[in-house]
Image (cartoon, rainbow, N blue to C red):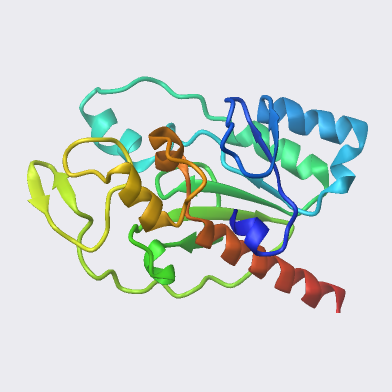
Amino acid sequence: MGYHLAGFEVDGIDITHRPRYPFTFHRADALTHLAHLITTGDIARYTLVHASPPCQDGCALTVGTNRSRGWGRDHVQLIPELRTLLDATGLPYVIEQPNGKAPIRADVRLCGEAFGLGVLRHRSFELGRWATAQPAHPRHRGYVRGHRHGVYRDGPYVAAYGSGGGKATVPEMQTAMGITWTDVREELTEAIPPAFTRWIGHAFTTARQEILA
């Protein structure tokens, strides 16, 4: 949605059926679909590729609390294979991941507070074949509401992940992130705010125009 608001025509790919997705949608394995676009030459129709691979292997919760306590399970790390395909496209690209230990460059880090949102939702973005300056990271106004390590804190932000322990309700997540097209909890907990990708879309367009000039 953010890229759409920044003026792009958007195609989406997911291995899971997403009937609420508001743009052209391809149900497929993303790596297989991307390889097909490269092989057939159809990738030339595109201007920019944004990839959000499964993040569980490198997210802060997995590498922190869960792993230290022996919780959870092993997760597949797709980023090296994905990056090889993205390089093969010849296109500028973006790889998005949570701020954990995922093997990406944090060329840009974004926070919901920079956009006046009701979530922090820190995310890192690796930029391939283009660059932009890191925006300022505003000081947080308080805590994320909910329980953490047995302590409950109130605050101006909601926790848009999981359930229980003071986590956000579906309407709260929709409002906090600016997402109206789905009310599916799983989709909301995996989403990033459209404000993030709208900012990236505008930054990419500006960088491209500067190169062409």
